[in-house]
Image (cartoon, rainbow, N blue to C red; front, side):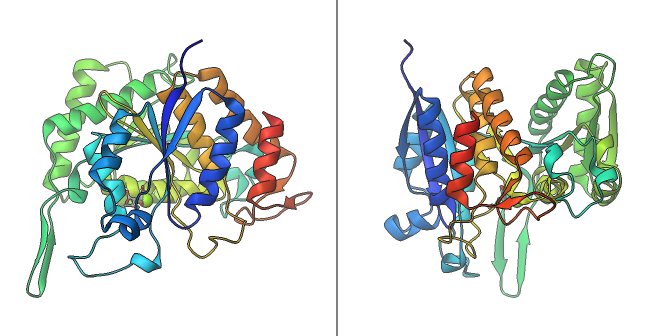
Length: 357
Ligand code: IPM
Ligand code: MG
């Protein structure tokens, strides 16, 4: 028998430890992983004075996959530029592990079509993938303060744009309907204003022409994309965009699924392990109350099984189990009600998913 995969689990802050425990229950049921926990974010600041220690970064690099739950909370909120912030842990991991490609699939479960604030007929048929560049742009440019002036620089190189564009085109090529020209790439930028966006657009065009001639490509300005995403979400397949635009658009897209509590993500690099995390934050307002929605974390475990551990059948089992409990009417409070639904907490939801596996 193959030896167990080594998983670095980073529970983090707020609801993180609660949904982390739910993930452990799921992984123990699935078997085949050896889990080692490490502090990150606020928990690491409290213990070590920094949001990510070198030891934890090394442990993550040496693992077969990393599962991160959530970081941040009011306890560590500060505008002091010299004070450590929980988010630095996450950003340090992304950069330190070279995780330049962030995949955020948005596919509302049939059972949740009425849980979205958008009308059912708008979101029906939505099945899109946000491919967000994750280690460049304004998140990692030079920044600072000089008296009453502050700045955050945004820079991209051709190479950074090329490699993320390839991820998006390759993803489009393997989507259902790709053969019939049915999976297009929508590249989102602000090329009418920003020089980085003009380089982005030019580079995406060149990658498309040289390597992916058969995949339809369109460009949208980011303000227009934000509008189209709620007016005709089902028309999107793969959305390719830079770091900050991807951050904003993926929260917007999450609401198509009814709740930010439903969206998983995978962050991948060239070689080395991937990092898998729910898109939602640490929800400090509900931490400790037992009502956190574990489903985005379970779906992130499914992405880990698929992209990180090559366990495709088990990934599908987890996704079907999540659909099954939703069809059975179980809802955590973040998913609004409807006929025949029953409100449950984290534990009951977790138990139901394990049974449905
Ligand atoms: C996300 C989050 C992070 C980001 C924060 C926590 C730094 O919002 O993963 O989308 O901005 O990338
Ligand atoms: Mg975000």
